[in-house]
Image (tube, rainbow, N blue to C red; front, side, top):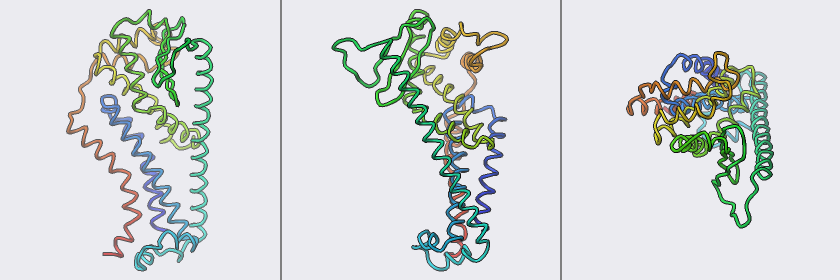
Length: 312
């Protein structure tokens, strides 16, 4: 039972340390794409630790599982794991608990995706009523929909036939490059498939509200994807233009007053664009990304240590 316990401790340590370390760092605001990778790798490490611990615990508890899991392994490797010798009851309980957690996570993800599809269906039905297709107009991917509305707004509606929606109020308020920057921001969400990041993070946070790392993962995904989309727009149209476009879209919503009522992140996003913080050098960015990509390998190495020792 030593390896499954070590994996669970590694997962718990990763879940406890990651939010604190990233909350104290200042580089995620400068490099949101790298921060997205780091968060995904950290959460993947936690989930992989649980999955490997479940597999090894099940192998220790049940001969049938052990036979399938270690079928191609030499006998010294199986003996090195000391499977089936001690802790059979605890191994079975651990395996069942982790398996139930995995099933619950999958159920939460399915529910979140189903809810998102329902919301998209309602919004598409509303679009069909408020912006019906003209006679002879062909439906195509990436179709731009102009929606009559008194509130400046623009959003990307993902799905089998994605839609980029902009209101007439936004067209009146934003001119030239500012409007292009807003559309580039929404296209940035679409190209990076940020909707799936939001679904997965929301499913974990809803399914396991007592685990702080999943709640922080959801909150940071919502924040970092907006910063990443801002950077996509600013690289094409400039930081000042993108900041002015954000102000134009949100100045009538009460987000810039002393007591912002909605979307309190908008002023911080505008300030970030205007102050233009120094970005990481390409070498530092590459090192961070490479280090993050190697993090999920750690639980695999921990799980394979007894087998490697036996082969050595």
